[in-house]
Length: 293
Ligand code: NDP
Image: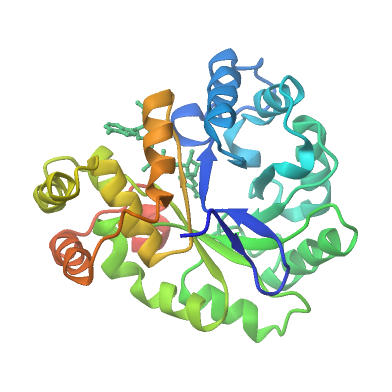
């Protein structure tokens, strides 16, 4: 499997495995001091081969990412940096400029609407997307997309006949949420919107002891791979890009080795994971908004 995915419409190569700075690194406050542990973790990630960093206005990690980028030697054009807007959705252009300033960079590779569940009384989806397009046209962002959009939200967006279609939809994707995500995944595939998964290890870390574990452990033994590698491989069969994270170098290396062409899961393996995942529905993020409970 190629280490990058080239988006058909935009010719932007996205590294298949991204390094996330939300979840375990989340502070939620952009005025907090630099997190030295995160700076160090990003340096480790870059040193073992990660080139794709996932940020968001909401995470409060921008200044730490900025510090990490400033204090290493990989040129900016070899890095792929994503960020997302949600809190300042009414003024997306300003939110982007603020993110760039905190990150201390002059463009983003990918800029996403973090979630479709923003207050539509404040700004419509059409107005929001027009601001996204403007940033793309001004060159502040190289690609635009969405996150946590379900099929109905994408239909709503595409019905607006946007000048620029969303390049990616970043969604939670692991075996326990796959069944509920089939519809949106199929819709994205048929509209050339890349699927970028977050929480790819969800079954292992957020719902240990569930029905998927046994199947994943068996496959890990069969292929002499770690359970995380089995889950990431499954993930990249279902979607296009996966965003994970870790504070540990061994795990980061382990995750990247999933791209090794010699490691494959066959259809039977994939189906065994699908079937085990379908026994339990579990979503870790945006649960209330998406599932309504
Ligand atoms: P993962 O499912 O990949 O989980 C990563 C976590 O698992 C890390 O905290 C890591 O901790 C731990 N871990 C890794 N391997 C193991 C193991 N073998 N046993 C136990 N724990 C392990 O992804 P996340 O849910 O953390 O999300 C990744 C990124 O996705 C976020 O940082 C963020 O950038 C993005 N995201 C986007 C969302 C959105 O709404 N758009 C929502 C949520 C996430 P350790 O340091 O111990 O290895």
